[in-house]
Length: 222
Ligand SMILES: *Cc1c(COP(=O)(O)O)cnc(C)c1O
Image 1: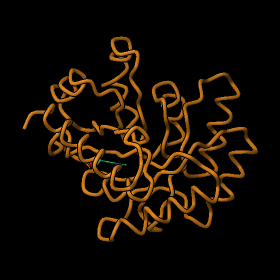
Image 2: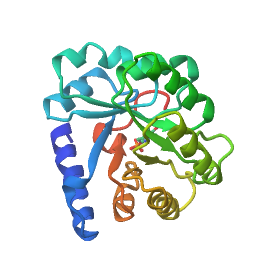
Image 3: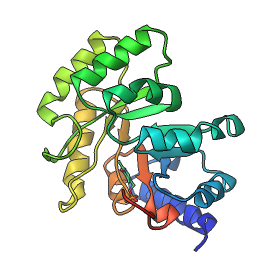
């Protein structure tokens, strides 16, 4: 299947899921997860008209997107992987959205750099809804304190993001994230990947992050 066919198919499934949930398909943004994909697939996606992309590593994203920015001024780049403190300045320069704010130290660094004049991307907080040891994200019980710190440092948070545990029913995690977002009056919900974006839309996802279903199997480590 070529990428145009895949994009059409995914877009159609998004529309159907939105319809089933009595939502407007326009309220859902497809974030094409381009991490580790070969350059020709990225070019095909751009030619097909995709402009919103997700990457999980700052350095890889710089190599891939820094020069393409000039060619595609309407690009929107989302950081969807963990952000180390020493990469924050580069991430702020490159990304339009950082979806993975998840700890006080990162909030302090973002605030300091914004105060020093660096452009501030839109920010989401990643919530570790499954409370998995090895996974990034703030634990649900620590979310209020982290949001308070963001407010105190003048960092606007637009929404929440989660990656459900691999071997669990994702629906309960989507429901939890949606509940937390409502409680804190946050409008953006980034949830749902290739295998479960329709369920995420049912629970209110505004951004679905789809990689392999769009581009095909990734060639290399996650
Ligand atoms: C890789 C990745 C995705 C996309 O996963 P697919 O199953 O290939 O759609 C989405 N979100 C995050 C955070 C990822 O790291």
